[in-house]
Amino acid sequence: METASDVAHPPVFDPRVPRHVAIIMDGNGRWAKQRGRPRTAGHREGVKSVRAVVEESVRRGVETLTLFAFSSENWRRPRTEVNILMELFMTALRSEARRLNENGVCLRVIGERGAFPEKLQQRIAEAEALTADNTRLNLQVAANYGGRWDIVQAVRQLALDVQAGWLDPSQIDERRLADRLSFPDLPEPDLFIRTGGEQRLSNFVLWQSAYSELYFSDVLWPDFDAAAYGQALDDYARRQRRFGLTGDQVEQTVPALVDSCVG
Ligand code: IPE
Ligand code: IPE
Ligand code: MG
Image 1 (spheres, rainbow, N blue to C red):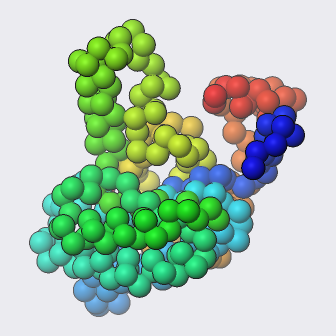
Image 2: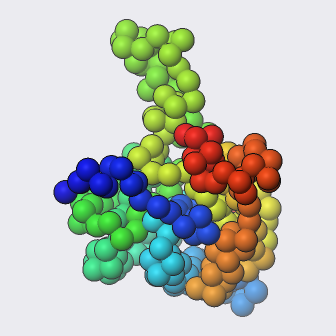
């Protein structure tokens, strides 16, 4: 139950620990190719890295972890690879949901799930329902997700509100648009990691990463273990986030001023 003193003293966050980490899990295909194995072997191996990163997030006090599992553009891959990815998603949901639940992880899938096979949509809904009340870590899996898709679906909702007469176009601002994106209830990613050596965003969380700290690792996703992830978290801990302020201002006035800037 919330008491008067909780309200007077909102939770204090350690600024060295990112509240929200978003990861592009890239490099599965190359990992497999290096071993003379089919690309899908890399995807299977990547599930172990997911486990490691989830566990390390809990251990380090990260509140939300968003993993890019399948982009809106990944449908362009060979049909056999797409099918195997769908199967892998199904089996991973089955095998991991109970374990996630036991570890207090709340699972949510973001993206346009209507494009997935009916059975997969059902399995997603079941896993989300099973873990809905957990609070140790929010795990968001971005599947058939695209940053541009997210912005467009938010704009469409606003347009419908205007059409219905609930909203005047002059009232549309950043806050109202952000409220219609995929995870308005969670903080924006503080740390944005991409494994696999490429240095691009590939249409992952675009709006929400406006002020994320970027970290690119050459490690291929199946090799990205707790230690590699720990290095990214340690690197983040050493950074100074300025949000448009000067370094001196940040040193003198954090966290109140920074909070008022990111609102
Ligand atoms: C990321 O690894 C997984 C998905 C996009 C599903 P890739 O499959 O893109 O691996 P590389 O980039 O080809 O090595
Ligand atoms: C981004 O990786 C998508 C996921 C990791 C799910 P890609 O491997 O698809 O990105 P590009 O195509 O190389 O930019
Ligand atoms: Mg790739």
